[in-house]
Amino acid sequence: MSKFFEAVKILRPNTEMIWHEESEEMTEEEFNKVLWKTGENETGEAITTTTCPHSELTWTKVKEEMDKLWVT
Image 1 (cartoon, rainbow, N blue to C red):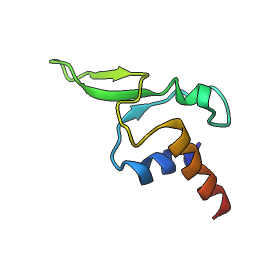
Image 2 (cartoon, one colour):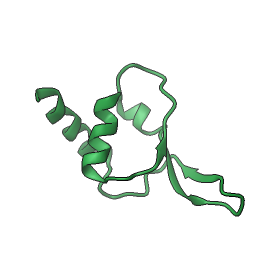
Image 3 (cartoon, rainbow, N blue to C red):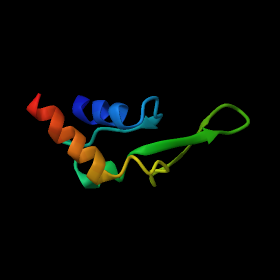
Image 4 (tube, helix red, strand yellow):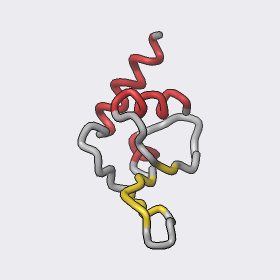
């Protein structure tokens, strides 16, 4: 999974997210389960969504970056 987190970091540094690993490999299905932080409520708890709010982090773009990392 480090390839997934590294790919996200390359495409959009400092992106906050929560992902509960359900498989050993990141797939599009797993990508769609990532909780993306969109803000905080008045008590400081994260507000999240499974719809990625960052246009630079589509499954296609993240997968392409992950594939590049496998080569290196």
